[in-house]
Amino acid sequence: MSAGESEIRVEKPATALRRGWTTGACATAATKAALTALISGDFPDPIQITLPKGETPSFALARESLKEERAMAGIIKDAGDDPDVTHGALVMASVRRLPYGAGIVFKAGTGVGTVTKAGLPVAVGEPAINPVPRKMMSEVVAALCAKHGIPADVEIEIGIENGAELALQTWNPRLGIIGGLSVLGTTGIVHPFSCSAWIHSIHRGIDVARAEGFAHVLGATGSTSEKTAQAFHNLSDIACLDMGDFAGGLLKYLRVHPVPRLTIAGGFAKLTKLAQGALDLHSGRSQVDMAWLATQTETLGGSHLKQQILNANTALEVLELTQDHGLDLAAAIAMAARETALETLRGAPVEVDVMVTNRIGKLLAHAR
Image 1: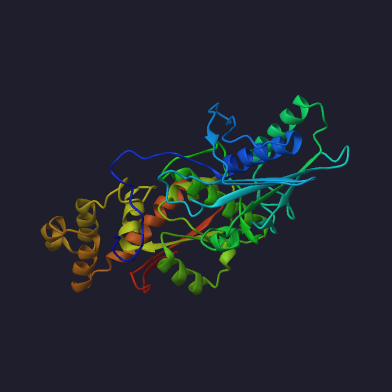
Image 2: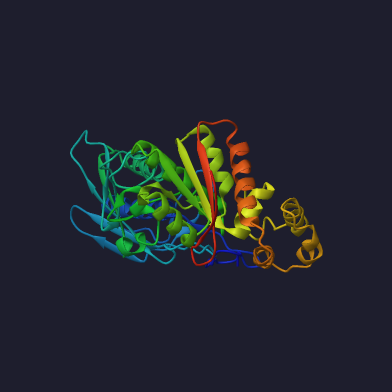
């Protein structure tokens, strides 16, 4: 647990982890099964698809329905050992043929959201189905239609059971995706505890904030510091980027896609790591350096505390020790963390301030 901020985290197990499949892969397999049934009258089960990198997984059908003009197939998403909110969700594809020349049309079924804000890779008003899953489904439809000598004029409606409820546990409401989940995926494979999905969400949050004209965004290490900084600066939810441990993912994207002002907020331990120069603040990938903290304390006139700091078990213990001796170590950490952020931005036109909070949300220091 980080000093200065209480967080709930699913830690990566020590044993080997099982991969899973993205929502986009499940939707593609369901689309292929449904269209095959619409054309031939039979549902292939299991159904095999080819992923962007050449893998050919097979998926068992959990639900199927065939009517005269429409077919539907459903697949239970298996996210492997990743703590994905959509693990176990039923992903459904319903297809019907359209008039000649209509092309391939995507529709949001129950549980799939609709894009309402600019800045995402899908246009406003479109179903929240990302470009790679759209491409995968389009290729499946085109291949099947070509095989049977019919035009690829097909409506694909993707739905996710209980998707509206599950979406409340995701970034979708902040990103302006209303009514349900997004259909995501770039490779079709879910890598357990992957950083890429989280960083991708940070990038999309920045894109939406820029498109909405926001001049000030917030990246926080957890919900407690986020609430404090959001209230302090009176920021909209859309301006709040769920940075978590990925300070580098946030700062490097802002370097190329700047927003005029950035606030970074977090607990003392997390921001100590940033102050030390770490850009990944996860406990498994960076550690608080007690010797470094002792040096910082010495510059504040606390050289007599060196041995106690070196023997300390946690950053919180160091913070409380320095506070007891009237030393403002939190302010020094905030300033050093701000310097790391500015160095990472490499001159990008972004003003930065850093807020250090304790675990109940009290502001300990503010560097600006």
